[in-house]
Length: 398
Image (tube, rainbow, N blue to C red; front, side, top):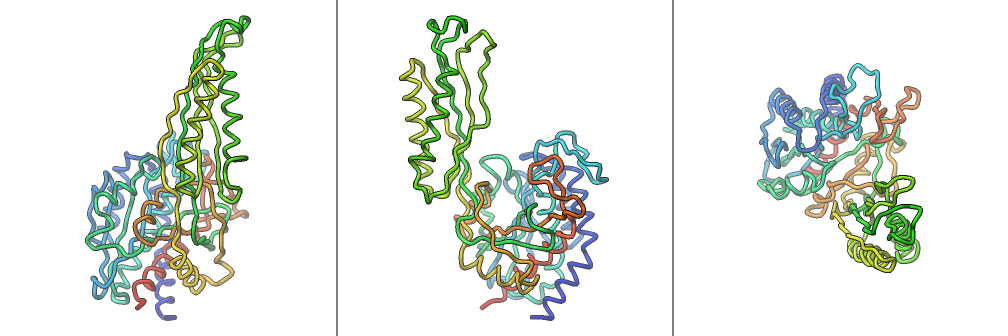
């Protein structure tokens, strides 16, 4: 086992600079969801250079590679990285900053892809040391519903060969580079989008008796909906209901005909999630009706909550401790953010763990989705080596 660890760590170190160059190339050329053509071409070219076979065009621009060890039919493990960028204008003087105006890898997907490519390179060189098959899953469109994960699943990514477990890693800017974090059980929340259109009767603001004020109705609805979290949710069930966009196209002296309200609701309980939808509609429509107006309610059903398989996660955390040392492996709390990796976890035992990328001395502290987000590229050595170590050990277990 120590010889295997030494082999993997040596390869991760040897290829570290190459992996950095891969990441920087990807970072310079970000593409949004459903547009990842150049990204896919680059991944394919890189896999070609490693001598790893693959299938492209899965769920649009998705790519599935295969690395077969001894007795390939023994079991198959899936390793996933997402590919898309965000519509964010990067604020960076780094030489590898985005060259695409208004587009940026602000969520670390460039790290996910380059790290998985580094892992693939390592695994391809040690395939005589493991039993079974590794399926590389480069997934498009994580940032845009319905997400590439469910589309790849529907196109058979977990079949032929059947995938036994799926692993993924996601950057975490609050965790130092060189460290990783795990959270067994419920890890990330479901996410649904709420769109309310409050309708009234506009008119002159100086004659409120002659209008049905949708601004006032909208204000009452927003306040009333907060009771779903504070008074209707079980206090032990994490629930978030937030509104981030209100549009009422009036003026200082003009009351508009309608007001639009957009928000999000998140939780870890699928039954409660459905109940929230019903209560949002009931409260919003009842208040609007009672005040003389109406409210159209649209709730866009998003990603389910992400559940990290407890047994698998405990095993991975133990293996990570062997590889990195206990001081570099932590247990994390659940988060109310969302991830379409959850769809993989619904089908097979899965785990999405966190890869630290923070370095305060270098000023690398910005959070995800920020225009100043960056990573300490030491994380690429940790990420590529650790995922290879985890995959080999899982495949080799009896």
